[in-house]
Amino acid sequence: MKVLVVNCGSSSVKYTLFEMENEKKIAWGLVECVGLPEAYYKRQAINAKEKKDSLKITSHIKAVELIIEDLLDKETGSIANINEIAVVGHRIVHGSDKFSESVLLTEEVKKELKECFSIAPLHNPANYDGILAVEKMLPKIPSVLVFDTAFHQTMPDYAYMYAIPYEYYEKDHIRRYGFHGTSHNYVSQRAASILGKPLSELKLITAHLGNGSSITAIDKGKVIDTSMGFTPLPGVVMGTRCGDIDPAIIYYILNKYPQYKDGDNLNTLMNKKSGLLGISGLSADVRTIVKATETGNKKAKLAFEMLCYSVKKYISAYYGILNGIDGLVFTAGIGENSASIRELICKNLHALGIEIDINKNNITSNEERFISTQESKVKVMIIPTNEELMIARESKLCLLSAEKV
Ligand code: ADP
Picture 1 (spheres, rainbow, N blue to C red):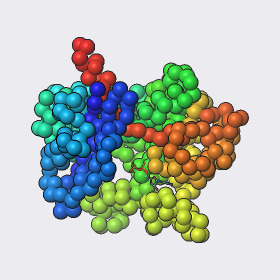
Picture 2 (picture 1 turned 180 degrees about the vertical axis):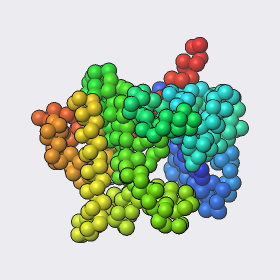
Picture 3 (picture 1 turned 90 degrees about the horizontal axis):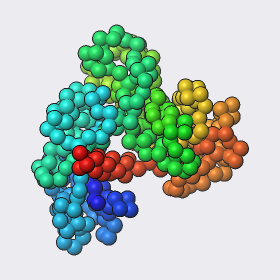
Picture 4 (picture 1 turned 60 degrees about the vertical axis):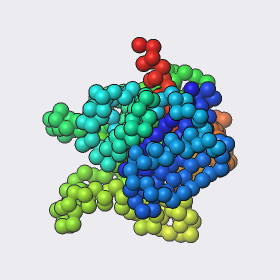
């Protein structure tokens, strides 16, 4: 069975075609800058070299059309017939509290998804455009929607509610949702497999540290709490997002600086100009921050330490909530690659039974691996995330269970 995974942003379409017999990627690529003069299409397949073309790509529909043409190409394509694609899996950022699991696309589901637009105005409309484009180009192939928020829907109400008047939950669905759910779900399943125990017997903390970062507490496979919230803004210090701050700071800035009376400017300040970039004044990229730290840049050092401290704080809090853990997982760009960040996060967590082996931690690799010492009570692991594969698996499962009904 072949599954096509599509991740549609406001000006991009990323895709991966999987052969599910062996769960291997057979073709993948992306269209960037849709609707802009600098639009391009970059793709690769297992049997073909990478190709990149600058093209006029005016819409998501055009982008999907290009992708399908390419997959069907007589010489370099990966499929001979479009019906070889059993199902298309779409990454959807926000499922609100309407979607607690992946769903097969129907007209009713489309209607419900549109009702989630106001809660994620930056992402969900773009995801929806992708659905419409695929529907137009592949009208006979079923689609499955896989939500970033769904895995977190098991949180208890006392963890997901905010202590503001209850009516805002009732009227506006304001509550913690959490994000990166597909990644936390994938790495927790992998952790169980590596530890050789069922998820139902494990307590885990998963740290997805990328440009956006979130930490999740998972008990017996169910999320108990997660650091992102109603939006992906709160939690740990991120590349350009501020993470947790005193909410009254927003009120203070808004009243003091006239340019922030416009909510959009304030939103940009917190989402795009804060975090590592805001503190260091240098970069949102951990690699640049680490280099600058080594040459004595004080603000870069502060940004680096703030990031590690905020992650450490969440790990410690979630350790308490879970009443101990079996495993701690690092994943995503920073979690998988930055030894110095992992080292500082795990430093002096002996009281929690977390001890990493510095030599193992310093090894560069893209394999799943342990970095804890032999004696460490908590197994500390690096597990490269694979959100596309998780979406493909979910889509296959959803299709198979719908066919059974
Ligand atoms: P996104 O949230 O956009 O998917 P990624 O998971 O790709 O982000 O993570 C991006 C982050 O990973 C950047 O801050 C980058 O500095 C960091 N990163 C990527 N490669 C390395 C590396 N080799 N060493 C340290 N940090 C890295």
